[in-house]
View 1 (cartoon, rainbow, N blue to C red):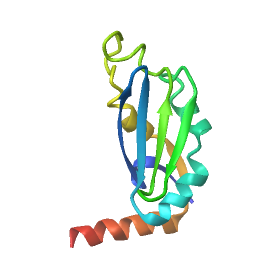
View 2: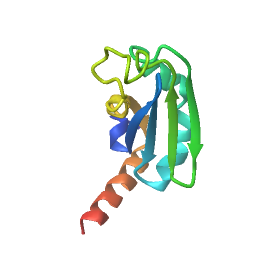
View 3: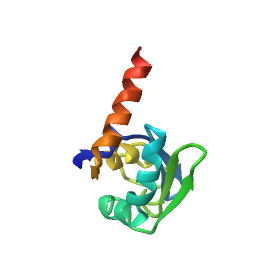
View 4: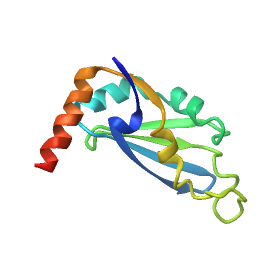
Length: 121
């Protein structure tokens, strides 16, 4: 196992819906998706984002995309039109979540690296 940031095995996108942000985490390799389903729980995301997310965190699985979608309720200070937050649309929330450290099996890291190298060839 290696302790790495989530960004090593996934990429992400985020945005807003009213007072909640929406964070999609996409596995960099198909085998990473099952690992993320097991390890990247709504509770773990809530703990990592507790300085931003004042409400519940919901997780939705999207196996056809190899992705997990998290809705962070009450994370935008009222939403884009009323919030005084610098990021009232939640555009940086994926970047923040991708900085989460996880213990990842070496074989998954190798698969991600092999796929990256194959794309460069």
